[in-house]
Length: 610
Image 1 (tube, rainbow, N blue to C red):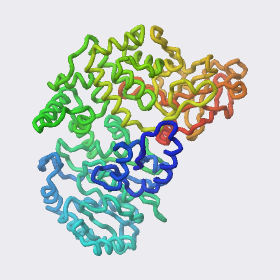
Image 2 (cartoon, rainbow, N blue to C red; image 1 turned 90 degrees about the vertical axis):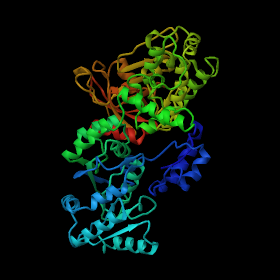
Image 3 (cartoon, rainbow, N blue to C red; image 1 turned 90 degrees about the horizontal axis):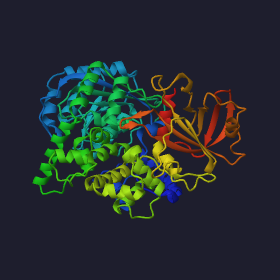
Image 4 (cartoon, one colour; image 1 turned 120 degrees about the vertical axis):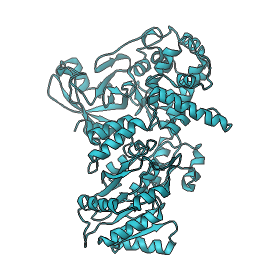
């Protein structure tokens, strides 16, 4: 994880140099947890914020890590009655359960021999198994050794010399497996490890990734890592979603879809499979372990608020509630808003205004916001109740029409007055903007190109059509505009805007608009013109010769039409230049982006059209 400040556009070169300098440390498990001195020593320089991190999928795509084959396997154990607290399962009860008989270890050995190609005597397998206790680790090492796979148990209690000897034995192949307890989660580099065994339930996403990472180091003659995760019937409070969200980098809802589809969106060479029973256990857990329905959210918030009040703590924030409950922002906003949830739970909140329900229901349309330009403009305008003259009115017009849609106030001044009558919504908006800024995933850049420098849009940020047309001055207070086509011509800036949806279905698009649009590489995009556009037409010629005529081509791209919170926004990939064209009605173009698309976006664009 790379820790940098939320640099403004001007600091981008500094950001890149820092990223390049720290990149080797990404693979050494640098993490941003308060108890870790390596992260803490850096974090305080940046106000405690983590703005950029090299995610697992991106590192795999770049070839920095070894691909893995993950198998989630039902192990016939029932953990539903094991004592549970906020710290998780009772470790001693788990250990007793896992060492009570040999059935589970026989299953582990059987699955290992089925899934790994080089287990038997003379093979090259080098495994790390993560256990719940010293007794469990010693039990596993003993049973593996008896099965012909020499193994050792190590823990934090093992002296350093014995640990060093055990690691060296594993490297040389004299030992086939090490079984660890609270050890090797981080800070140890064993490239030869090609097998990871999850032998205890791990709820912490951080620990899960750290343990997985012990096997992802590249090594000679190591083409992939085999990961066996043994899954039992979990306690109702256990959270399977945390590990899969951490691995895939997606939301809880998206994780559920990926499990149902067999994890189709993975980097080349990697795979994830859950057997039938494990799939049922995990999906059932996803539906029951998190209070995702409104009444359950109300009960959860009420309990958390009462607990904090009893301890004399400050009122619970939206960020704290998300962390405590395991919910995502779309969960909160799919059936109301944070202010309404607090009212229902009896938590103190400002009185409701006359348009509270309408404005609260509109907040989900802001969940895509991810660029400092708009976030700061909205924040200043809200805090000043509309009196801040530095906020770009085009940006505020976009916010106004997002909140009120086509029936927005006629002026920005009227919008400010009407919002001021809703102090709870204004307070929630400010809280939400801060949270969205913390969660922004990409570094953004100003638009570049003739006459584009003054357009308040950010490259690699997400925008709705309302926001981008307000930025171009097509939507203004008292003048709403709705666009339905895939292209738009802005004469004032000599710019053609292309709106591209990569994943298309026949339910949402007619046969004449199922264009073949996809990413060829991070810099190249294949795009088809409208079906009526010919090479000889004025529009076709304008596209082909846009550079000669000082014209601009802007690409706005999204994976699919719908998102969790409604219509999906577009990511502005920025200005593009003509490379080539073929065909007619439609014309097939290849465009070169001036700035390469983010790695994670390219991964999705590539998979979506594979």
